[in-house]
Length: 257
Image 1: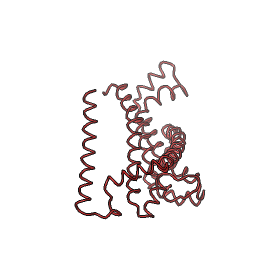
Image 2: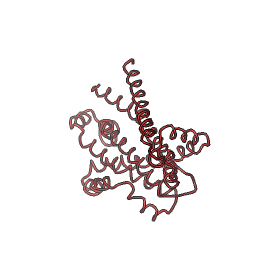
Image 3: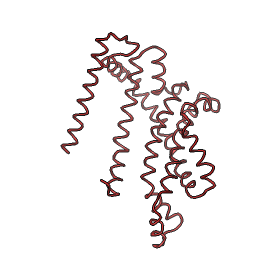
Image 4: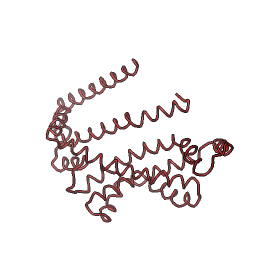
């Protein structure tokens, strides 16, 4: 426990040291504010945005879009990945398609989403789902195909078959790989949503991507850097609160920690 607190303290001190170096470099070199603002002015923007509720509202709207699209991507990707691992027909069609589309940059889905759905929430939801589902299909297929055969033989010997084997043997055994896909899918979903919010302008709510876009339009670099910092902080919090505990539990369960 003491070592953990020590690491946290070292990380915080390192962060403040980097911010101090950033501040000193900007001030000494006389860098223009529209190029790179000092961290104190970025922090001042974040405080103002929190006070007028524009930043909290944007965070809520973005997270709502992200969670809905991410959940849909999981619900589609995991079952389809299992089908790809079981049937060669799905592997040679959907699996091959997923392998190719996973390499497609998320921003490429935005023009297609706008043409299909217009400037609507559905367009953003489509982009987030497309950013999530392909990595989930590949991770699930990889996890199921790499289960040691002895697990399935042992389950069959004890009378497990059909749906019971999938739920109680295959899914738990492949979960480490699925968790890796979930983590990767979350990162892709973030990137997809930021691209969608920058290019899709709707009046139903302005998210972090729109704040980032309008900061660029107004040459307000405080706002641009501030929103980027908020996105980074949210990503770190999700990793430390959700994915890291799950990974630690899996390592302990499988006896590798």
